[in-house]
Structure formats: C-alpha cells, structure tokens
Length: 362
Image 1 (spheres, rainbow, N blue to C red):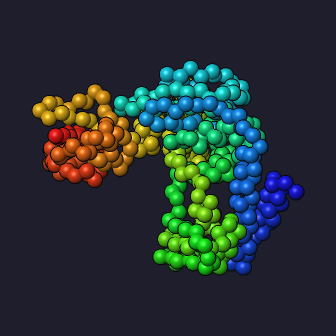
Image 2 (cartoon, helix red, strand yellow):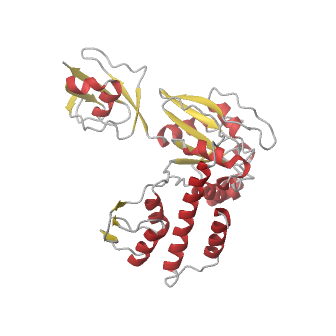
Image 3 (spheres, rainbow, N blue to C red):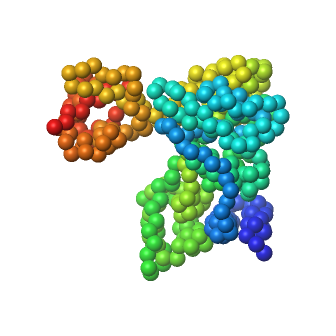
C-alpha cells in the first residue's frame, strides 16, 4: 500500500468517526498519522527527481497572487490594476502560465501574479496543482477572486489552500517544542486546555515523531493547531476575498453572496468599479508603510518614500539604507507619529505610515 492509499484509508476512517469526548483521543491520533504520512510522501517525492514548476522571479516590495477557479476574471483584474497584458477570454483555462504585473501605489512597487485557475484536488497534484500552489506559497498576500458562478465553491478553495499547508489570515499557535535525548514528553501549559486532554497531546506528539521532548503550550489549541505547531512547516499568509463581475449582479444577489462568503470587496474589473479601493486593501493587507527621509536643514523628500513593513523600527530603516549607519548614528528625529514634531527617538521606536525620519550621523 503506497502513501496515497494509506492516507485515503485513514481519511476515510476519520470522516466516519463521530467526534466527541470519548473519541477525542483516537481522532487526534488519526490526524497526526495523516500529517506524518503526508510529510513522508513529500520527502519521498523530492527524492524522485526534479519537479517542473512555474518560473517566477520575485520583484518589487511585495508579491501578491490572484487565486480562484478558472474564468472568474483574474486576467481582466490583473490588467485593470497593473501594467500587465494577460490574455482574456470567455472560456476556461485562458491562463496556462504565470503572468506578472506591477502595481504602482503610494510609492510601492507590488508584483501581482495571475496564475492558472485552481481546481478541486490541486493540493493532490491535479491540474498542475502542485506547480500553482508553489507560486501561491511564495506570496506575501493572497487575493481570492470569486464570481457569481464560483462563490458557492469558496469553501473548496479554502480547503485546497489548507491541504497545501497554507493558513490564510491565520497566526502560528503559541506553542514551543524542543527535542531532548531522554525523559519522554514533558508537557507544560500556561492556560487550561479545553479542547483535548494532556494524554492526547502526548499521543499526537508521539505519532508525528516526538518521543523525547519538552513542550510548552500558551494557547488553548485545537488538535489541528497542535499538529501545525509540531510539523513546523505551515505558511501563515494574509488574504483578501473579493467578488468580481459585480456590475452583472442584482442587489439581492450581492446580499446573498455577502451573507454566504463575507467578502472584503465587490469589484468589477471590466468596469473598473472599486479598483482603487482594492489597491488600498492590497497595500494595507501587505502591512506596507511609507517612510519619508529628511536631511538636516532641508525639506523632506515626499516624492520617493521608503517602503517598509508595519512594525518597522528606526533601526530597521538604518539597516536597510546601510549597516554602517547604525554605528555612526548620533540620534534620529521623527515627524508624524511622534508626540511632537522632530522628537528625538531611540532605535527601537516603531514608525507609522507617513512618518518623516531624519538621521543625524557622525
């Protein structure tokens, strides 16, 4: 029996097992076994030779990928907000390769990628799924594009991403694990675990390969979150959900879709409706901020901002400009988010979008 057959057998058993307190332990072990087999299957596949995928060179300040089923208007959307020229057609699978485009917005250069339409079973390799998903995994932001026909299948897209180890808009579980040479499993918690018993935690750990280890759980995690933490290869990528072709929809249909999917925005790439709002969502979703530099005795240069990420410190800006600056920096002044204009602030100060920064260097 090969990996796929073993996984299918365990998934079938899992699907027919009713989850309750009595079966909690066995369900957890089944999930752990499936995760371990999937990991082993990937390792074995890599040994088999080179995998042919899409070749995409990342450029700009960030990379965004348009994800959706075929013919939802991703190509039209790409063309409407970037300098790309992706082929558009009223039939499935128009895009058979990755088409890049560049969105210039608020001084940022954002790479957008139009990829072949995702299909059910992509995570298992159907429809060049592995290649498509490899591009998605390298993204800084994922835009899920739906339309009137595809919105009922939104859950399927989320399932494909989940099965490919992508946790859209998620965050890593607050769990730390350290292997040891002996002593079995030492479990420590800072919160009360309500979703599984301590023995289930230890059982799951053993199934995925942790025989001797110290684990500290600081969050009331589920079995799936625990497995994610133990596997350590999950990708936590921010995402936006939009519904395209809104110009063809009635108000009643929009309300129905909004209730079912809760999208971030309705757009019409063809009519360019809400395109500017989408650009702003992309900029915000990526966590980008603009920092304007000011030389002593001169006005700030507002024409070319330095594009950084939310949470950036003065130290981060110095390092990006040149590592030597940190050694020679006397002090820094900030206009914008500071308590008063031109306030002297330390290297650990977190800058905000639109701040003006002045560095005084020896």
